[in-house]
Length: 119
Image (tube, rainbow, N blue to C red):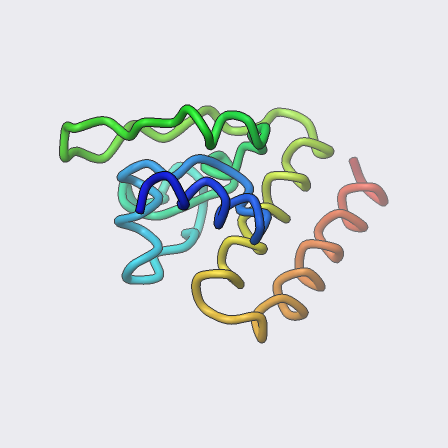
């Protein structure tokens, strides 16, 4: 199975490597929070959706420790934040259905427009 996994991830354009924190959060649909500071340890945020190169999927071996990894650092610029947020939207659609794309993309586009109007 694992030799075919990287091909499936590439085919569906999955944006990042899956670790335990991503897997454990996707299963119950634990996405986001009121603020980044108040985000639960098991919830996914923008920081979790770093774009990785396709080649990394070929060599990736998940850790054998069954614990949730620490949250990555938050992106500091809007371009990176928007890219990672769109990655998260794509992952949510792959996991929970494409019907979520429009509503989440529209919300992200609104936030980007707001930032550009008042940086």
